[in-house]
View (cartoon, rainbow, N blue to C red):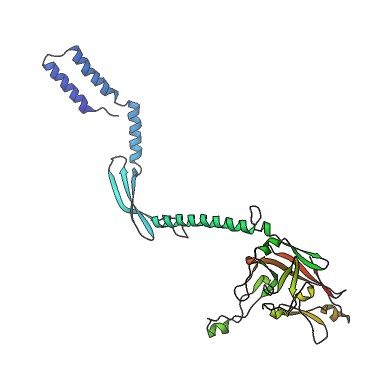
Length: 342
């Protein structure tokens, strides 16, 4: 750094005063010379001066302002404003730009600054999720879901087997003891009529059917099926009454899973949803004069859920507390009988 000439001038003045009074002594002279030596020691070398000069010249040719302070200003629902304080690195002069920097507020679509209330809400949501996770752990433990189960229920894994022509469900003892009841499902493709009670006449005229739904649909209701031990028993009543509580009886025969009829041509058919399916191989009958029935495989599933009475709520596989065990209903044209299969 440069020599402090003011301090050096003061030392010389003091030396002159001592000389004028003829009171100079070796001690006083040595003291003054030592002070001059100490002052000279604080001065930079020529190399240091060259470095500082180059730095000053280079800095003067560039933007030599720097931000030394940021202070939060006013905020609203869209922006947060900051006041910036700058310093000139050459002159040391400071300047402040009020509310010069604008930061967007954080939303669900973009990152940004958050208000204190948003942070509080986020922390509350985090705590609520932690509480829900604890409840889920308890529920999963009760349902038999454990780590590594891949979303299925370890203690509620059921399966179907056919023994002596009868359909049995294995692994459902605990479910039955806990109050769960069986439901029969089958693959469906539905397009129900549009009957919204709140719809206007124009809406009803423009939309006659709902969107198509595909997947597993419940077959009947909880009144359609029951278990006798492990054996599956199906209602012997007509299928249009499967959602009523009073059933004429139950049987383990596969014949009752489908409704049978004979068309006007004398060919046997069975009902599948709203469709009447022919057992006769109609393609073969068109090509030849032979009338031969075909083999039919109908896919079903059985699962357990809490009792949901007809008309209260829709029943889907999402309601199940167990896995969905699949089985098949097979028609053998050679024996002209329906049997269970896997």
